[in-house]
Length: 70
Image 1 (cartoon, rainbow, N blue to C red):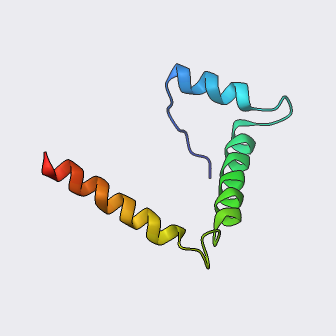
Image 2: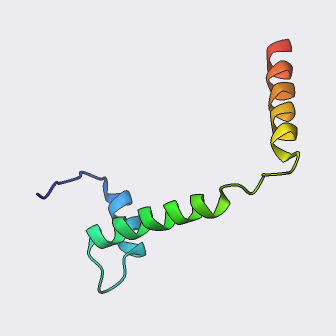
């Protein structure tokens, strides 16, 4: 089953610029979603066995406190 998606002209132009000559818009959107999933999967676990997550939590907490203090 086919679906239509409305996009404004700027979005259509941006997508058309990303689309390969032999690629349909459906192919393009599928490729972009696949690439995004692969990027997310590649990043999964990068902070494992480091203190980066705790440092990020502490920085976020500090920023929230600074905003609340004003």
